[in-house]
Length: 230
Image (cartoon, rainbow, N blue to C red; front, side):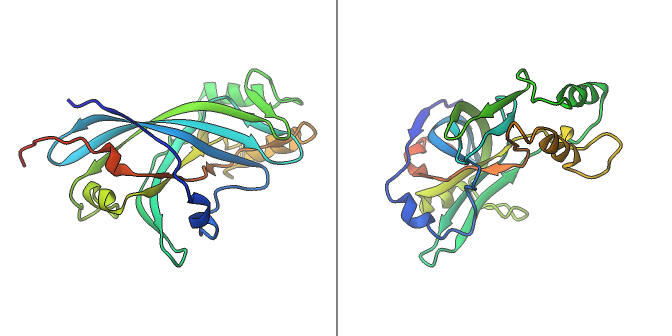
């Protein structure tokens, strides 16, 4: 087993490349920025590299009113690596989304009941005032194959190294998938919209997924040189 640590920082010139990107990374209410990335090589063999990412993230309220968030930790549902061509076309190189199942249980119904009150409960929600930020660390992991898989649209690890530096974003699930269906209603987002309406005098309840602003990484600095037999 190989264990190594690397810290990536935002490279200069990112704003130039992202000025006309096809992906929306920010909105008029909140934005998520990646302050730094620490990558740990969990395992490497002749076929793949398994990595653990530790990201220092900041959520900032960019609106003129309060923004209500559920909880203080948010699930990662997607990690994307991409490049931007000279013509501003975005080319996705690696994209793997994960999301928990949408289930209904007595615990979920109880939690929905505890949320469905006139004022956002301080034990379950956090209100960001105008310009206020909230920072936290998030860990996630991915396995990169060293050769292109026939059934996989993601590029191989070796190709990612050749194309580096590349941009990376993380997508956060701001409100759990399993909570977002209102009891006795089939429509997804029904419960989130219900809370949004109920709490509107305290701020805007954010229940959508959100994509972070990108960070530019040179993956070559993370190469672990090994002498592995094919």
